[in-house]
Image 1 (spheres, one colour):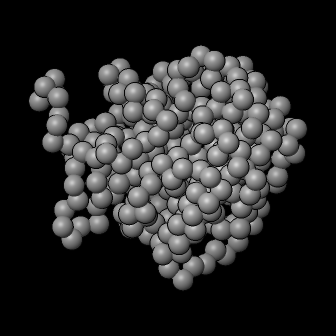
Image 2 (tube, one colour):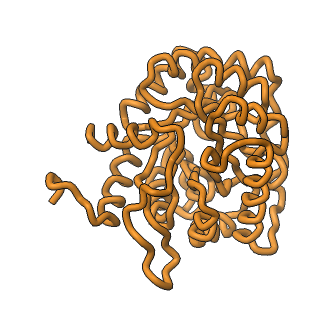
Image 3 (tube, one colour):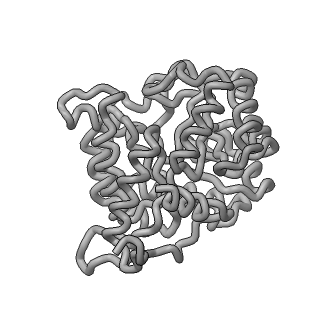
Length: 307
């Protein structure tokens, strides 16, 4: 377990996640994609109203301790956010968001146990977090809410994750519709990738997230997971965030947030097989173990100690 956690940190200690880390090729005619070593992104919500753990880590000391624990369990990235993006969430003023995240980013980045990602849609918040040690900007709006954020990322030379969302958090779950959810999401991500590179961000600095649960029905989420290889084909690392989401509870007969770990693991293993690279989760240790076992079944280069 300690070795796997170390391997994950090494994989993510580089400035980019390279496509050359493939461990297996796809079967002809299958909907699987080359499998890469899984990277775990642990969730650190410094918010009072996030859907799963809102209020638990609003205090900076509690959030830092939580981040330390996730890193010790194997998270290579800690994603620190100060504004809830749950369905129906209202925007948070810039000063309030800064006050929540900066003390946490500064302390966790200073300890160096994991890379720090700032989960924000605002340029001033991202700029301050980068100055404090963040090396990834995770923008759920994909630079739509604040186009200037692309310039902040380009100037700082950090990585970014661009996510698909239908509309904005307050309204995204009100009757979401698509012609073809996978084709529509793919076209959106390709357009956002083109925008990012046009603003000066090197393509190898961009990760893509289909936005599971962000303006999608259960059927939409399942279709995106089933055809995830079509998004992987864009050629950038794909980030998956199914952790504890409501569609998992519905599929399992009405499980609440604290009972959705089995569904989270199941969807992450499926996504790994279909080519996803980064897995954003609340429950780090269990997902590290599950993905280590799953990845071993896809690899041909299993170490001597595992034979």
